[in-house]
Image (tube, rainbow, N blue to C red; front, top):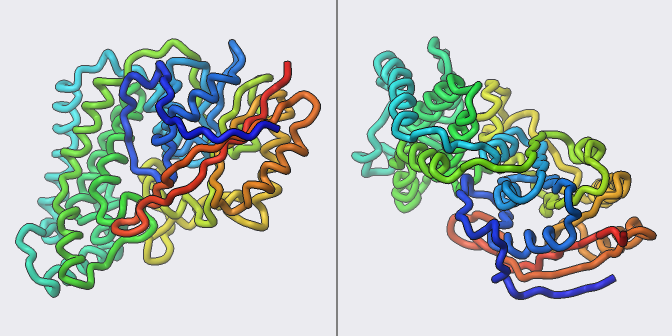
Length: 405
């Protein structure tokens, strides 16, 4: 076993010379160490064989390698599948000005319909100065969950007003989501949904994820929340859509996206693939932080639970459960070996499972035909806290299992 610590993050990777559009804020994002990961994928990749990003999340690895390799982007969450489809889209034949005009017409028709019938549910936060008024209108919006709307596409207005967004912002989320369906058979469909995810992530009064919204029980908290209540979802949406249309051109490789459990994805891999695996590190489930994006994509009016208004069917990863994580790693390793594939496993030195146990298991599993190598890199893990502990200094380990021949 080789064990190297890499502190040089200025690795030059040709595919990263072009700016990769970022879409959502994501806990534990690998973008800060993207060059490190991609260069190691390049080092062991076998010519003519695909690369699989097994837990693709925000799809930064998928985006980086979209033109270089035949690629499989997999994640059990539906929103991740949309992000992957977006990065793998060729939008070069679209003219943004035409799309903007067409979308605007459809969105505003929905907005006008709702505002004419339900104008009493929308508030001007720009004139709110005192805590009593603020709390009164926040509670009034949260009570919309009891309202029976008779106009379609009202999921966010009904369920999330006064929580992560204002009723006004929720109305625009619903209107854009409805409009997206009119492009369902076009390539730009995925970019529309992804641009809406971007707008939601950057206008929420929480921290950019959706574990829980803030109540605003003090004047200072109220003032900070109002900053986000006043953010224009529609402008943020078009800002990102314009960027995606302007940057996602044609690719020449075979691209596949899937939303399979990791075990099933591994079974479907071609022989001698290269698998990049970045499973969850923490004991909290990612579905708790991104449940509203899952609901946006599915738009299925789910049963909601607890203050955070979580989906009742949230995915629970075995990698986030101490009692199941070791076995999950064993299944992962055996699934890779079954197709004689190669592996690059990212894992934090402060994860649910001690890193020495994972290394030991890898050495036990990858024998005979494999060489196991361990690399390290210093990394700031994004916790996405609003004020304190936004980033944690961690050591990111890369466990590499490569074929001898």
